[in-house]
Image 1 (cartoon, rainbow, N blue to C red):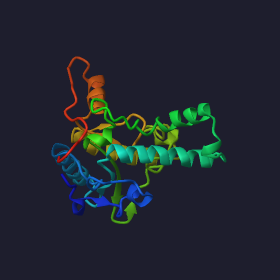
Image 2 (cartoon, rainbow, N blue to C red):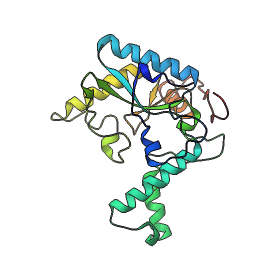
Image 3 (cartoon, one colour):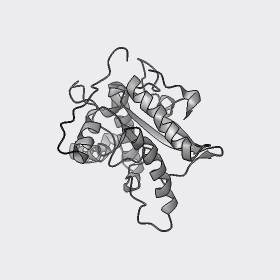
Amino acid sequence: MPIPLHQFAAEQPHPYVKLGAPYAERSPYYLRQGVLERLLQAQHFLQIEYPNWRIQIFDAYRPIAVQQFMVDYTLAQTVQARGLRLSDLTETQRQEILEEVYEFWAVPNANPKMPPPHSTGAAVDVTLVDGEGAIDMGSPIDEMSAQSHPDYFSNSLSDCLFHHNRQILTQAMSQAGFRQHPKEWWHYSYGDQLWAWLSHQTHSEAIIIAQYGRAEGGF
């Protein structure tokens, strides 16, 4: 289902579209209907306490081709930032850096039984905005560093506002049934394999299975 962007905030054009990512099938602003309904609930929960705040959609549906594009892009950017050239890397160097990339970018696995979260249409990357603009979360979406971990600022007196803002987002999304990625403050999902695994960690006595696999065709 297309996300009704007039009810949220969203960057236009989409950040990965601006990079040239190959969205051939549909807009990146798509989610499973059940997931979209929960996202609307999360917005409602947020605005009960913060009426002028909105959830900003950074990314949602991501086909395998886009996942591969972003992994390749991130690999190239990481190599360049270290003063290296991709063509000069040994296979060992390339694999070591790629492992770092995979800490934040799921493997673009074509196996329908092991889909990247965003390729299911059940994962969404979000942040918060108010009437004046973006709420400061302490680090940007997609940053490959420990600052991206949800609780990174939890013990910092000087940066406690960042943790507070992240908690506001987490509370709204959790109330709607979403689970947060353990290493990414911005990534939430409902019904995919990561959601099932995280839910099982909380309710170990229950059998919890993923509701959504890789999204193909219409959804």
